Image (cartoon, rainbow over the protein chains, first blue to last red):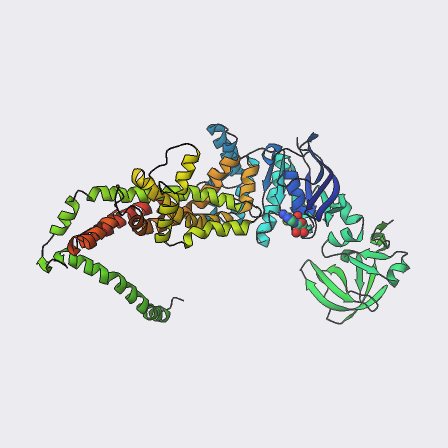
Length: 334
Length: 288
Ligand SMILES: Nc1ncnc2c1ncn2[C@@H]1O[C@H](COP(=O)(O)OP(=O)(O)O)[C@@H](O)[C@H]1O
Ligand SMILES: [Mg+2]
């Protein structure tokens, strides 16, 4: 079981309130991603759950039991740190076996679990090496191995992929998702990268300045962002947010339209503008279009075949079914 | 940086330093070797010619030789043990966040700035004096008979004085090492279920291995030659005569330069044996 509930959890560092009272329910077996800009308190929240920081107020419940005062080792949670935090003077085998050794598990069982974890993570050939002799991706896997041998109630990951190069990151992302499918254990995953959040999560928690902006499945957040912050944060490239005269025409303070929901044409359309930078990805092309009377250029997605010259005249038409409207407070209007 | 040209340029530019250091080392070494094969008594006839290995044989067969070796080893070993153990404890203590940390750290380093002669005298007269010393008062306050430190417990006293001097050095090196430990490693160990002692044993201590090696090596080099602390306290009496002190007595008190030089060569050999021995035991920590 790995059900975690936060109830009015608060965290202050001196006078600085990093987490104002916050409630969150995480179900058993869920893959939950905390996402938000750097410094919004994601790590702090994770460390509060782990027990590495004491809460300033509120309760942390694990499987319905109050764990607020329980030391980290007895919460049954395993954590994978951003720096991996491997023990440099121990071999990979000893690193992975360390939590078992601390639990005074018998040697045969220790060996069995380490061997099994090494197989799952493709580390069998590296068991006798030191962490310093491994690549970044392998170190990452050792850190995960050290977490899985404990068979914890839940896994906590703090930006585990941010030290890897882009190609490796995509690979590890898949591996972690597969691991989740296989183990079906609760995982809480912290990242500032909304692509990781969208691709891996069952449930995304969007945080800003310690507050939860929205909780929901990736598609819920994509389709119905609750406010302008979530609208701008989820989705890549970012949603175009417009205010002023154009928004008022649609009866809102701010309107949002994703690049993929703007139709681009060289003949006619609702808004007229000139092409600025174009980004060719092969499958898609993104055009940044400057429209007179708009504060920022609009980003538009077009098919990969489309090629437009710099400064050429184009017309844009928003798809009304996918137009998001927000009020003066930035909240969604249906 | 490794072209033919840059390498030969580097050699030329390093040459003065290398030659200076070689001269610095070779001149006294050669002179010591030279005198060790001579009967040379400055006040009793001067240079009395070559004597082969006679000085070496005499130095070793003297009844003071083996006791001096033992005394040296006990002092070096005792001081190393005390400074490393207390150094680790102090370093851990100083690493804790506390009020007045800066001042406490400076206070801890202070003994290092006191000259050996001065600290020897301060300990002898202010702490260990059997009538007026602080320790004597302390003993009396508890109704105990004051200890005649420098005569009854001479060797432990010397070890204590020298440890007091070297503790700051050990503490400082170990403290910087502890501060360089990644806090996430400790937290990971905490989550892995390691209690305080296990965290120290399995994470902190291995992390300190390299710093401990450095402390042990550097201190050994200096401790093999301690002299002032013994000179001003016991004057080599009560079983505190180290190899260095014995050489000093042979050369200056008995005015036998040849014999003293032979002792010097033994001292070099002893230092090298210990150095090789230490490198073997702890050296593997350096390339970990
Ligand atoms: N130990 C600490 N003492 C004081 N402030 C802290 C401490 N840890 C984090 N903070 C502050 O809390 C805020 C959130 O930090 P963090 O949780 O690390 O953000 P994130 O992981 O989302 O980037 C930051 O403003 C940071 O400066
Ligand atoms: Mg963080």
